[in-house]
Length: 366
Image (tube, rainbow, N blue to C red; front, side, top):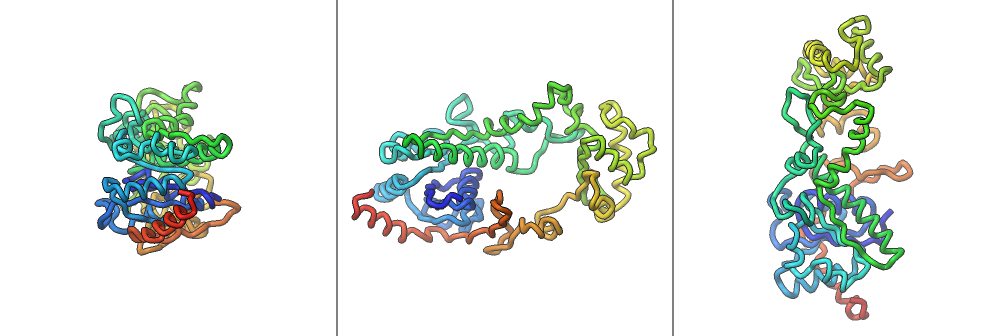
């Protein structure tokens, strides 16, 4: 889909590399400028997030290497960087410099707090950003500390995916106007924006400012339950017809204690009853019971278990490649399920990219 689009990524951690991987999955040529050395402390020498990319190691504090980086950026449609505000400017690769070389460049900046504001220079991580944005507030039942799946709501959802959307919109605009833009993708902004669907429930009285009093964070029909084997099942039968299907399979259709689905005052007692029922049987029992129904119950699977799930396997969602379990590119186009591309070694394309730049220079194009 994005063949012919070139993206330069300045190596970093977390959402920036994920955004670049997503663009590579969609067909863009992504060149990641890596620090010289064995690899970063988190991902090691062969980083899953580098799949499908070309790699070149450059020391951006070295004049010759900085010139190579600048020449590469001059050939690109977009750039991705994830440093604190001001770092790229101090390296000599800020937006003003890059736009002087390449006016149509879309300059993508990935941070937690944003390019400005009182916290813009502070350190932080996924959980801090979504706590500040409000996205963490409804994340867990009232009797539990707010908790979300690591990285998914902040780094990926509120950060990387908004950077991808911003870069693609910028590329479209640049193709029309010839002028690039700076994309300020802050995790606090994106994670707050993602709350629009949840916040849309407020006017109808379905979203309380008190934790545990809203349908999606307090109801007995919207949570996970522990099973006899130690595993868990998820239950979220929101609509009345799905709640009725759930009660029917649980043998509770005629139980007066469950007749009222939406009374917050009854939710704690209803939750306790269901917790005791689910705890009496292993997860596999409940999986078989609800399979094929509209009761909106599903087992909580580990990634390894998810790869073996019949639905996930049929769609080819998980793959083993380069010795690591990894998800297939998403979304799909025309039903195709492309396999992940290989993970390159560090600096795998350094010589080739330098040769390409030399050729462009000889032709007067750099």
